[in-house]
Image (cartoon, rainbow, N blue to C red; front, top):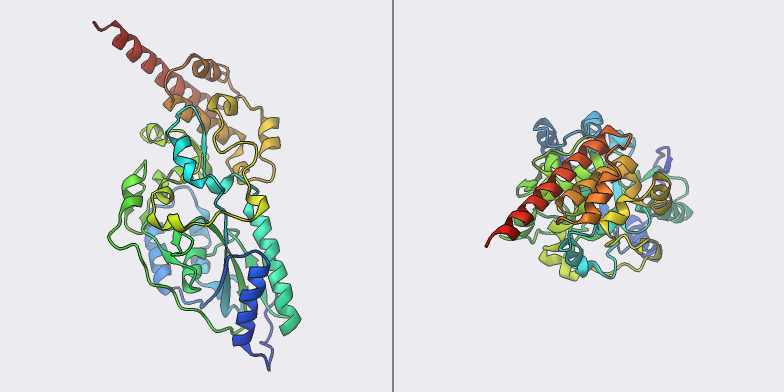
Length: 372
């Protein structure tokens, strides 16, 4: 995160021309789109407060702790008049083969955004370079760079900046790029001309709602994070609710189902960013192999990746659930038994559950075999 103190807007600057330059510089820095948003988020603030009041944020206490700073940019960064919003594509070359991994219960599914380098530092670094280019024209100005790193309503700001519309799954959709992209923001005190939000194009489609494995999209544009597999495998630190475990399948870090079925993602572009290329074959590795990782191996193989956010215990918890959901196999049972006495009570509890699922499947298989 980078910031400078607010300062009086420089005089004698053609801000329309500067906005055009900012878009050009952003493209040169590797952003696929750059827009400028105003900071009026009143309707979004009301939606956020209603969502928090309903407890749909689960254990993400930080969502409530920052209050309305999230929806009032000038309270987070004093002097903010506009937000420069950027997006960067992340889809790997095999994005359309993701279903192949999801349909093989012996493999672990990792959300496609997390297969390469953690995007936070990369995008913030590019935003800093963009701020430096702006300062060459304006002189010192007030700004602060973010990418999913502070209380920011980034999707609402990106919408205001013309980067897309909010889909029924609550993600941002772009008619030329689908939804496989990261967002970043540069809060600024420069009075740049804002862009206009695009119209929405979801129509009557409900594919994202219908496909959600845990039915976490409880209404169009409303997500119950407590049921969302991305929340369960990344944000939640304690036990995964029993009733949701069988619904998670082989998803061990995040979930892409609502994006995979979205018709607009036929327009998604494969990323040209080398840092987002998949690492360590995590696009579809065997669950038993992933479960055998020591903590040192986990840290080494996820260095610089978003998967680190789950932590080693969370990783083992997630993979244990996926192993419990896998078909009965001796190597699966052996892998689980090897962790049955793990020092972590969290891991032990999920391993015990997974072993129960495997035992039930073995029993059912033997019953079926005994039938004439």
